[in-house]
Image (cartoon, rainbow, N blue to C red):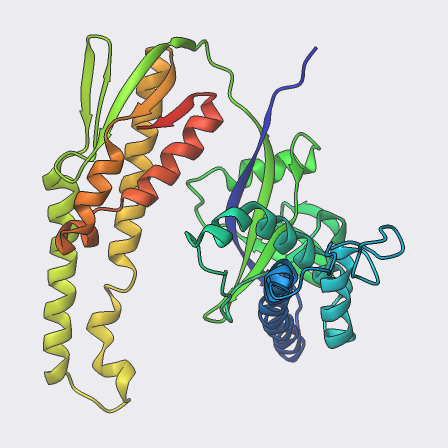
Length: 366
């Protein structure tokens, strides 16, 4: 029996350091921030070295007698490296950060960046993509083998584990998503964890957990084609044979979004007359209510729209989904600042692509 295709699913889970003493928690948090900062510097170093290695042949354009190959000279007579290629970047960061960060983190980081670099290399050389740049709040990766004592604490209703000798417990809140279900499936060995990340932001710890999930099985027909169009007027318009529907409306998506923008602008203007006394924080208290509000609203609506589109395709057994005339619409959007600012085409495309792959639907962008 052939195994079902597996997909990677990422969920953002908040963590707390599971230590009773405040000073111990503070020291553990400081250590995590140090590791994240080391990974931030190491990431930029790795990508820089990978790019230079690929561009060495361009530096030799004035000579004709130099043979060039990025390989270990012990294994290839034309090789110019004194070790394997992936080991070059690992050795650079290992020598620089030895003793400051667990080597398992550096090893995972090096593998991830090497893989991502190879995937994006053609776009680097053609000039369609700039070299990746990393920020201080980028998380640090770790493999599932670095996690120990993963269990469910019924009394506290949370999942606990140890990572590099630091105990953690999850904070899921009301959790309207499938995070709790996925974690229980990991405990039962029904789902496997892959290389994940820990990210620190605004004093909070987030676990970007990556799960292996099986592709959904639906009775789809490849010859049944769904034609969908994305626009600002109607977020999604889809047609399958004689069946046609629109998903979302301009009033629901755009006007609500503009209302949030206007409310934040009024709060900013009114903050001039707000009572001070505690500096910037008190003056901007009203503005802070709208922080990330627009982003969260848009993200939630795009999830709903993409879910309804895929459900419509599954209902009518459409095995192929074509996004019609999207390239022309993207070019037109770039000419209008208002449309470009308020039409989250790329985010919607990303969500549709993921959900289509999960449902086993082939996506074609026309």
